[in-house]
Image (cartoon, rainbow, N blue to C red; front, side):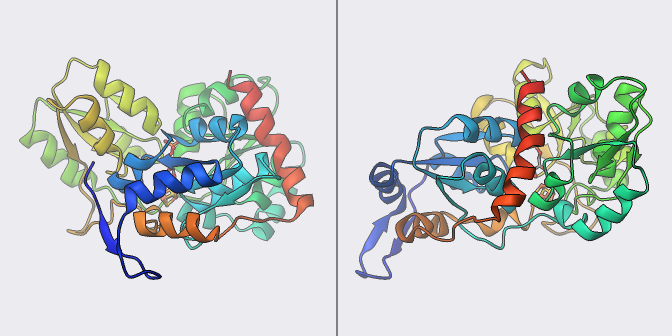
Length: 320
Ligand code: 13P
Ligand code: SF4
């Protein structure tokens, strides 16, 4: 962990943000939940770090009065749906998700009307309105497990990620109707550059998140959620890995197995667009300020919250 020092806007004094956040956690009885795609210094102050499933499970069982969610909006919103009486803070309210945005509620309602007999399974990367229109929520960690629990004669709509949907179809043999949404980060990986990288590092094992396109997943020897990828690099005999997901996860991989080598999968352009621009809106400074001022807070209409709660609870029950 390195120490970030910045001048306090109020007292004009330098503040050790790590110490200040630790103190605020105590004062507020707050828990900091963070996703692996957050900046490394945010990962280092988190009380719990995990994938979307682990984070919702933590949110469902925390005794804290305040949940500080270092992640994107749909994640903090899920925590609020599970904890209507707690204060749920998101360091930057603009931290959205391109995948969630690719499924607007009105358009999805029209789509759903075309398939009245279908069960709706939605990936957690969607808005509360989409969750409210769904029967079961899933994450990348449990999508296959959940679809496998649905009777074979029950037709399914899977939304909003077409890439995860295709992967689940391939793993389960189920013929699901897919909403054509996608994640801008996971669709940025270049298959051509990945093949070049594999030639340059012939010993490296390629691992990928199922939000990647089929062409990229074809090159992976292991596919899983961020937590599953992190566990896999610790168990595998391989000493080097090409990692096809947001590179924030590499911070934990390096901490877990410092002697192994992790090579981020390359984006199409020579840019940093394999970093999620939404996740990276959160900074340690914003995390501190949101705790200090107890804002921005996640709120949502009670009717939407109640409708969205049921499919999340079904997911939690079906994941044990
Ligand atoms: P997981 O947290 O399920 O690995 O998914 C990653 C992701 O895309 C979060 O936006
Ligand atoms: Fe959304 Fe993709 Fe960012 Fe995850 S990585 S928060 S799916 S835009």
